Image 1 (spheres, helix red, strand yellow):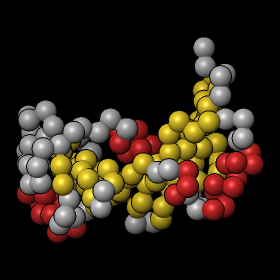
Image 2 (cartoon, one colour):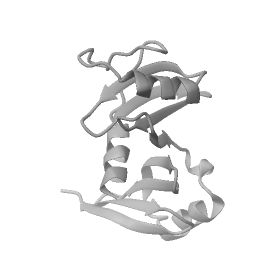
Image 3 (cartoon, helix red, strand yellow):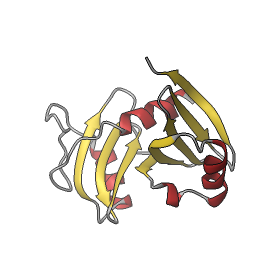
Image 4 (cartoon, rainbow, N blue to C red):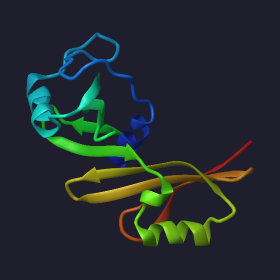
Length: 152
């Protein structure tokens, strides 16, 4: 769960990229592992505007794929850990969309994204009103409260 949250939060700070095959991180300091780069190239052959970020736990590729801004996370062995991308509320499964409308009608959506992993897809949405910000998580057809923040 912590890894999912770390992936989700780090996807919010994506770097703008230059070109496919760029093996430098966005800040130009570290190289991307050839194993990771090969795995990425074989998985996303038509990716554009790729920018890499390297951390101790994973490699992150921020790129454009099929006209969507996507983030792919790989481990040191080149295994794809997760894919994330931002969504429109209209892109949610119908049950989740209707649940948001019914239970959070007094809130607006400030952030919404999907995290796809080998064990399934998880959705995160941030809903807000003047006093509260709530982060909800859905790994099925039901939202659960992930974090609630009282605004100052």
